[in-house]
Amino acid sequence: MATSVNKVILVGRLGRDPEMKFTQGGVSYAKFSIATDETWKDQGGERQQRTEWHNIVAWRKLADICGQWLTKGKLVYIEGHLQTRSWEDKEGNKKYMTEVQTDNMLMLSGGGGDYKADYKKKDDSSKTKNGSNLEAVSEEMPF
Image 1 (cartoon, rainbow, N blue to C red):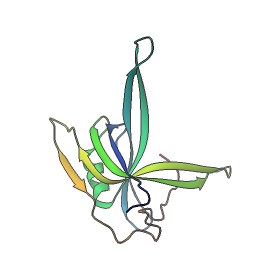
Image 2: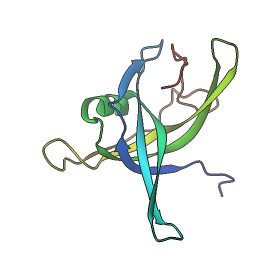
Image 3: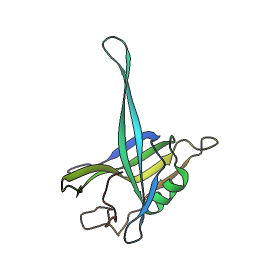
Image 4: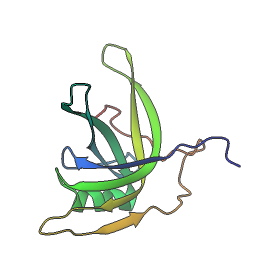
């Protein structure tokens, strides 16, 4: 039996086109954000809405697919796990960012119609010893 679970499932719209990058080792990755909305009625019966933004990272073949097919405003299903990374800014302050490392992606809306395609990441033996997909990224700054 598992002692812990790190699983994220999101359905939301892209806030911008994916940004394609490469690690120093030449591994492709895509960074983008998606928005999810929560709607409710307050005590006065007025409709309220809150938007939550999520930082997404896809690796290798999935990154290439995201870079080719995803654009701002598209509806997408993302499945993955949370990973927090840290770095020091120019003033020496420690910064943190939590991202969704994507394991599975499903395009729910497309260009001329409802184009659907999905990709499920295969197990990858090139993960680091702590199980992370992150390799030495040439630029450690957030989105």
